[in-house]
Image (cartoon, rainbow, N blue to C red):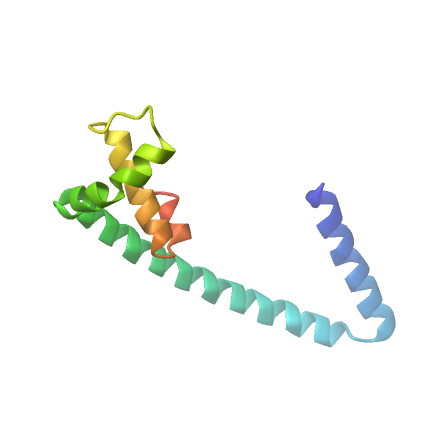
Length: 112
């Protein structure tokens, strides 16, 4: 559905800019928005790489086991059938820690 809506909006805006005489402004705003989008993507990728690296280091050390132990009461409540020695238990707790720290984007690709 969105592959129909967005091209429709783009075509309408180009037609409107053509008839109102604002093609220069439309062209400059397209390049300005593209520049802003690329800068935002580079910033987010750098941040995600940093936090994913920190979470990987934490998973290789005893820090992750300590964090898992702190989250154990919550995990028992949320996942009663999950075995506490399971690798999945640690991965879910890593994801929860990343979300608690406000790293929602970095929480998605966390895997060992």
